[in-house]
Image 1 (tube, one colour):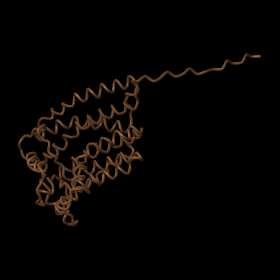
Image 2: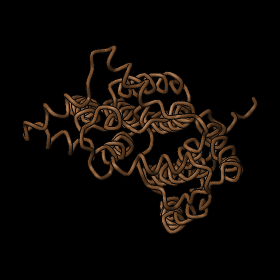
Image 3: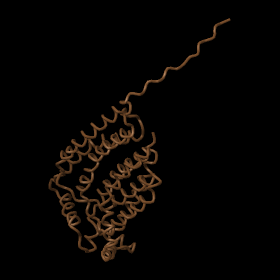
Image 4: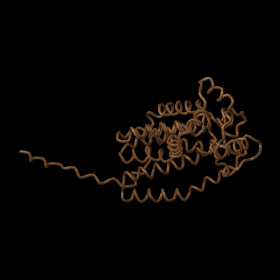
Length: 308
């Protein structure tokens, strides 16, 4: 008789090294983000030189934040803290993406194409829409004016929540899709702004703008001039059509709304922000429609990018 074979037991697999959490994988999201950084990281200084836009070196002022985030990432990897690893990686990515994408707006503003305020106002007129009438109506009711004005200013915090909250609830794909959508939205906004620059409805509808709105026309006209412009001294909100404010509000609502308990609040806030772009006088009606269409397009374009 042959002796029975001894039962075999598989040795336990050793735990993965923490550094494997940082190892990049070849996913559509990583490819898109990496390609964006490379392409625009090279293109920005070349385009800036062509259009005589100086001062891009001021973008390097992000290095203290970059070092803090990198140190935090290293700490989270060593512990390891998987959820915080994802958060640190995404924070570093967002920082780098904004560094290469934000200059596109000023580069686009240097284009030779004329302002299209009259055309945008004419489209609003055909739609029987008037920003100045809405601004005047809301100004009569402080219980409407103040919340809407605060909603307009709340957008950066809303966009931040659209990243942090889904990440806390383990919806990494939602956050990746949001970031990818914002990247696509910024690139498309810069492309449209190149050909369709405008100041805002106060230029054509004759209402009294606030100081921030008064700053837009001189800044945009300076960028349209032949003189060299210092990037670090330009801080006016330049994009009129399409409304990036509306697009980002809807993208944020879509991302934050993926968490069921925040869905209703997210869409209420997104709606208030979209309305506030008109009640504060910043945009023509067609700007808001353009921003909404842009958000829908970006969501559709990134539907599969976030998947591993």
